[in-house]
Length: 258
Image 1 (cartoon, rainbow, N blue to C red):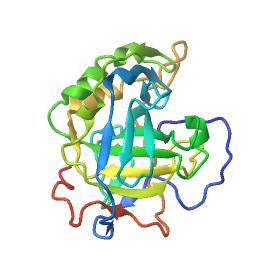
Image 2: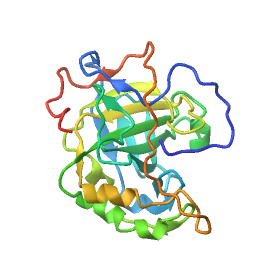
Image 3: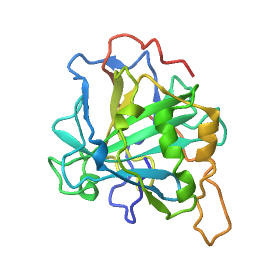
Image 4: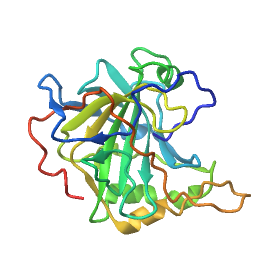
């Protein structure tokens, strides 16, 4: 989760993210609904380098792009998406699947606009934020991802931003929308435990060349000595007594196509 706040209201407890998802112990919950994505490409606004990753930000002053159903009650408004990656193609995802990592992980961030007035307010509450996680596996270059990568030269250094409009976020979703879900936290400071995590079970493709473009971004500002964002993923946290729920009754056939 590429989000930062300047204060620390909540103490860390036992609902931190990311986690290692054990596919055999995840509990099938037949009451979980299919996810409903209703994204308007016209709400895409800009790409910004925030120093630890880049965010693709959306207009979120009204409910033009929302996520509903799945494990959620009400609607969650799309705010931004970003990626986590590693210094090589061997790792980079934040969540682990049976102890294994993917090269990268996409986080699509939404907030509970039915109950709260702003993202900042929503992040103070356990039901405030919903994040859809999508794993990236090595394969063919992803054309939807390429349209983003072609703009990264414009945001090489921290604080740089460029317009990015008319983007169809549905193109970064896999065909199969089965998922795991659990309650957790932001994965950057202040680690608020406000997130309903929805981890899709099928990965999307990314090429090694595309991943290399992520690592060319800098965590430093324009007038500083360059330092590159070679990796930005948090280690897994204890599951403790949480239960991971699954939307499908059997182990997904595509899980281990790393």
